[in-house]
Length: 352
Image (cartoon, rainbow, N blue to C red):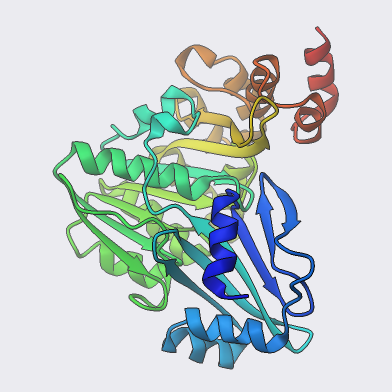
């Protein structure tokens, strides 16, 4: 099968991911379910290698030959951009491709809480969007960036691995830098971005201590910094950041984080039962004075209680968001309980 034929079939089916692995048919993920495109079309090692050579640039191919893994982006004309991971498995190339729509969706189309739109009006500080791989973090951040791009006259810099949504400068001047092609690391890109007169900085992922420290410092010095972490709720996000630091520095970073953190948005995607598609359950933490005190005093275990009692100002726990989706008929009871933070408690809530 031709690569473009595979991608066209997957695109028409609304697939979020495509997997090309030797001795298997092409497989796509549609609404979180893995489905073969055509069970009769088993790919050979040579075919998958040819797909890789077709998509990857010279630098990505050289990286792959050195370390047996490479991440890069690929644009299929008229369809979508793809975030591609090439890797070796059983002596052959494997390809995992995540589809990224070429047009940034508006925030209003993402079924997100209204409070997330309010976060795009923040003048400074750190905003984190967290969740598992494939939970929609990139799309949420892209929609937030696009909202600011249309509203402000500012300088936005994004640091990504790889560039997924491609923005056009509208009211803002918008620059996108890709790991590998435009910068050697997130930490290096962020360090130099601070000398490029930015107002808003998007860091693809706070994946190490140096990047995290620089992001917090950038937020302290008056920039609005947006980034992601692979954590499932707000309190875990705060603890993950603090645990990156040596024990002797943790009190200091608690104070810095309490001063700079503005919000944590944690997402989990569900398959809809009312119609084909996905919908997010969203936990939202806003950094009120009470939350800042909990962070400073190492009482992050109390954050869930603050979220539960602060719904009037826009906070919401993950389980409350899941329950709302269930009661509105968007998701199944089984999925709701399976992904709940406290399943036993949610069972009682759904039975009430």
